[in-house]
Amino acid sequence: MKILVINPGSTSTKIAVYEDSKCSWKYGINHPAQEINTFLRVSDQSEYRIKYILELLEEKGSSLDSFAGIVGRGGMLNPLVGGTYLVDENLVKILQNPPGGEHASNLGGIIAYYLGQKTKVPVYIVDPVSVDEMEPVARLSGLPELPRLSQSHALNMKAVARKVANRLGKAYDEVNLIVAHLGGGISVTPHRRGKMIDVNNANNEGPYSVERCGTLPSAQLVKLCYSGKYTEQEMRAKILKEGGLFAYLGTKDAQEVERRMKNGDSYASLILEGLCYQVAKEIGAMATVLLGGVDQIVLTGGLAHSEFITQEITRRVSFIAPVIVIPGEEEMEALALGALRVLNGEEEALTYNS
Ligand SMILES: Nc1ncnc2c1ncn2[C@@H]1O[C@H](COP(=O)(O)OP(=O)(O)OP(=O)(O)O)[C@@H](O)[C@H]1O
Ligand SMILES: CCCC(=O)O
Image (tube, rainbow, N blue to C red; front, top):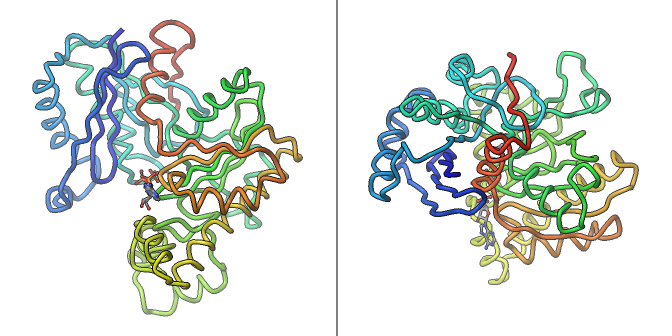
């Protein structure tokens, strides 16, 4: 069964074709900032990206008619349980004005639906950013007006969690894992028997990342917001795009930071150590959520390619459980397998109910 996979990121669109669970080819279309920045809203980019995708399919000799299904990354919807969701006209309308706000992943379902309409094949999204399987106690923040929200790298984390369970000879719903996705943003999640029962919101809680602040001292943050120095938009950018490593060191590239460390830059060492320290602390907190019953800790995402980072975190958390490193992300495969489970009748597609 042939499946087309579409994963829109902020600066690229990744495309893959799967023949059942095997990847036939994969390609990343890069979108120059001067082109992407001309669009006011993320959803305005769909036609622009579709044009590139159709050109690529033609170049690769992959006809739209040949696909049994199309799957896209899902976006900032209202909280929903993990799984594969059927994309219909109603869901497309919601993705065009998503309740959780702007995010490139909102385009996944929109683009996939447009292409699916051409050949009348089913279209899906899998484990969107807004997957929410938190327990009631995890939602409390200390202020009723500000409940904690689940926004995370659910797609990759669930995929690697399934893989690790498989390596342990068990099903995903038979193991307890802590998965830390260490990418542009950082998500740390306790998976209790197939459910992500808590998670730091990767946009505004938990460890600082290469570009995001994570948890900040709240009273000082309020003071800064009202200092008159920054507009709301500037504050948002500070927290989501210009925080973490970038704020301290002026780069989002962890490899560049490691080069500086090797050249004796002790400040760069301190800042990268701080990131690892905060990730380890979050893992420690999530171990309490699982009452200490952790089968395995999993480190994944781009930063998990770094030996320094994985060793530094492992040194601090290996007393909790064995640590396994699965660097990079497996989003394309996760999307393909999510669609495949439904297409071959192993799972039923869920319907999004706003
Ligand atoms: N081999 C490596 N060693 C050290 N760091 C690396 C390596 N490869 C990638 N990185 C770092 O990983 C970070 C990016 O991670 P990743 O590619 O997972 O992010 P992303 O896909 O842009 O964002 P997200 O994962 O939040 O969706 C960058 O800081 C990059 O420098
Ligand atoms: C909001 C978490 C997902 C992402 O950063 O892409």
